[in-house]
Length: 151
Image (cartoon, rainbow, N blue to C red; front, side):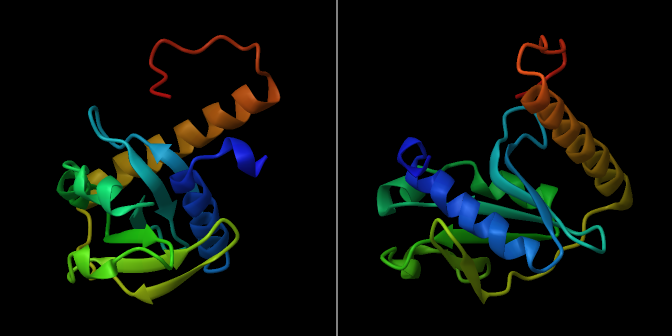
C-alpha cells in the first residue's frame, strides 16, 4: 500500500495518526473553498480547525504559492515535514510538525487566530458532508458522484 502513496501523502497519514491521539479527526485534500485544496484539515474536540500542509522537499515548499490563502480557513496553521527537510525555510510564525508515514510530533505550536463563527459553522457543515460522501463512496464505489461533489 505504501508504494502507491506519494511522499506528501505518507506525511499526511502520519500527521492524521498523531492528531487522532489529541482527539482530532482529519480529512486529506480538503477543499474549504473553490481554488483551495489543503493537504490535511483537522477538526479538534472543541470545534477548532487546523490546516496542515505537508511538504516533502525544498522544491515542493518553494512552489507553493497558495498557502497564505489557507490562513483564513483555520484556527491554526502548520507545516508537516520529514526530518531531512530544511526547516529554516518555513515561516517562524507558523506551526511545525515533524512527521513520517507512521506518526508525527508537534515541534512548534502554531499561533491561534480564531475563525469567525459563521465561517466555522460553514466549515463544520462542509467537513461533515465531505467525510460522509467519502465514506459512502468507499462503501459503495459504483455510486455515481453528485453534481456538487468537489472531490
